[in-house]
Image (cartoon, rainbow, N blue to C red; front, side, top):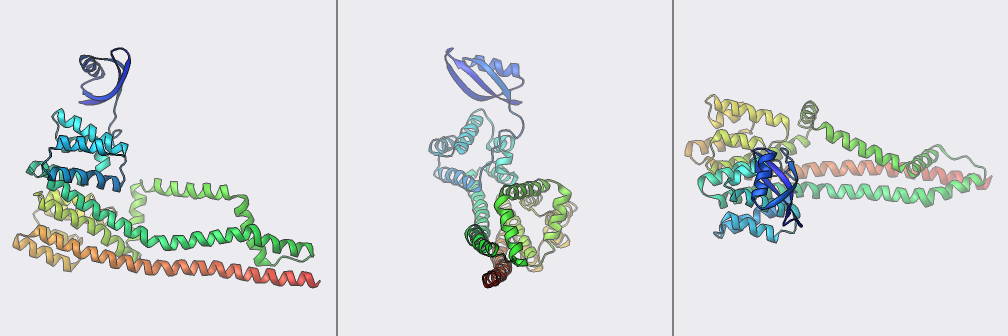
Length: 398
């Protein structure tokens, strides 16, 4: 059954807009007329069109509010109404009202999120909600999703904070260079020219760079924007991303961080899915959706195939080389004792500490690299200044 967006007249004077499910445009028109409206415009909503992008912070806000309301014993319909009334974000308001309307029509929460908001929430979110609905523990499902979202937000914040200091240094360096090129360098150049002296080679190169930046800054911005657009567009190409991920996973220090981040999400979903009563096969499929590096994702896919062929979860993860040896021992103990969910949680806790260690190591490597680059630029400017100063004194003596 397709979904249509309509615009109609009520009492031949007031415009009303909404969405409706129908077999065809004619069926949609008949339903709108039956509701007492005069259809003006009917448009079919294509697949994925109704899935707006929702930032991680907004997902956490939406999920947190629903989790609190459901834990307080408030039915999901009323909880969604409350979210819509209190939401300052128009996307959250629209999503809440749309899901509420679909639930009143008889759909399940998982069906609505999968059909209309799969791109907004993702497979892991909808999968955990489905498990919660099936077990009658929807509030626990939202609690599990909230735990995952907050963990992702924590990792994201750590990455941003770690890269903030080097970025500030680079911006300050270019800002100082821009000020010098506007006010200091032209003064030296003017004195040397007025006295008939020759501009030294390094100073001439520095003047050329600064003049190019001043005159063609718009071209630099266009080229940078084009480069970013080309790179982001290339990431959609599977072959390009496969080669990029293979290269990243081979770079020392960087590879440790990438592996830890991917395994952190993987183990967290395995823990949450298993506790939600999802089978190991389905849990592996959900956890695979959180792995972004294609090299690691292929290993997870191999472990899934091994489980399908009868291997235990420990054997599959070991043969596919998904987890390190120490974590395999923990998973094996959980499989034997019947506490696999708890052991996945323990592994996730261990890998989270490794994420912090890998990020610290990456930061310690990144900051000196930036300082070396800044030092090289400063050295170049100092040498150019020295030549300019010497050239200026020579032109005055002449």
